[in-house]
Image (spheres, rainbow, N blue to C red):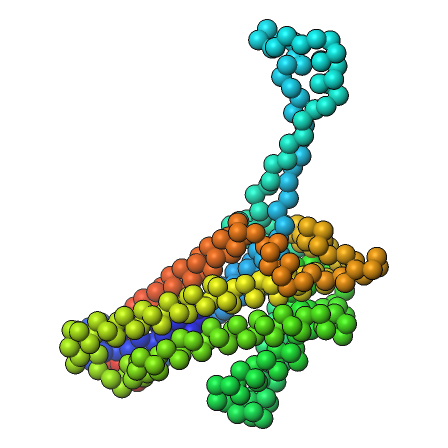
Amino acid sequence: MSGIAHHFVKRSLDAARETYDSGSFAGDGDDKLFGHPYAVGTALVITSILWFFAMAAIQYVYGGIVATLTMIETPTATAFEIHDPAQADQADAPLLSADEKKSNTTKPELFCVKNKPITSKIRTTIKHLVAEAGPWSRFRGMQVFLVYHFAHQLVLQMFTALFGNAMIPSVFAAVCTAFSLCRLQMLWTHVVISAPSEKKWYRRYPTFEQGKKIILPTIVRTLAEQLTIYVPVTLIYAFGLEGYALASTDFGNLSPMQQKSVMLACLAVVLSGIVTGIFVLLPTNVTLKRVQASLLPEEYDTIIPFDRTFGGKVEPEVVGGKGVVSMLDAWKTFGWAARLRLIALYAKIFAIQVATCIFFVLLAVFEVRMINGDYVLY
């Protein structure tokens, strides 16, 4: 999503620059607020930094923390008793014998009503986090996140230099990187889903035995991620769209029929990314997170309701069980209501990111126009 947003910003700024080149926004010298040529550049740099941090915060808080909690939450239920109205001394109550009334009073009806999930809305999730762990809980796990991504980039570069950057070698490098850092990635999940703890995050590092249990779901999730990337890329080259992506082919010089074909090809590329993302990447990501959550040590409570037994499918190791949910059970116990809730969350995140990009593009254009109406910074 961040890549798409970056493309929107870049293209919008290019369009603004072309507009200034054409003189549409050129004004008199009196329209300038500042005459120094670096004023525009300074304003755009500051705006770009603010845009970067805004997009990063949206992706981390909503796409990371809220999405992870959505993947592992187990909705709770409230139980209450309802007695038969016939037991009451009401005029319209059915006539019952003394024996029937006595038997009915000993057997009240028990009803269970499912509570609305905490993660049903972004606002309720954040409100719950703040109530349980304080205002900075929005960024919980940030230290682990930064360490993980720094290590990920370092290790990935090492494997890429070793295997090469072609498609198949790069996939192999991604799998090896994920395998090497699977325990660190699971640590982030444990920190995010657990209640506040006095123990430092680096003292909660998972054991090698725990790491062995997430190797397979980690590899499967990494392969799904690579598939989601390379399927659209392959279609781009198959349809010959790379020239348009690199701005080396003029779309306007094509005939109407050719333009229609290019637009349909672009639609196919976008749909391939959406389909693989929903039906391939999302299930494997949910499965990995739930398997990781099942390995959360008993000494840590979760910050949201979470069934550690996954409906009785997981038995602790102390009683002879494996102590971890299987990949199949991890996905099967994630019901359709939760799946739709997660997809809706991703749709909201995308909408928020697009709105944020539009805001910063308009802000950048406004700054350039107000600071120096007839000057263009190259």
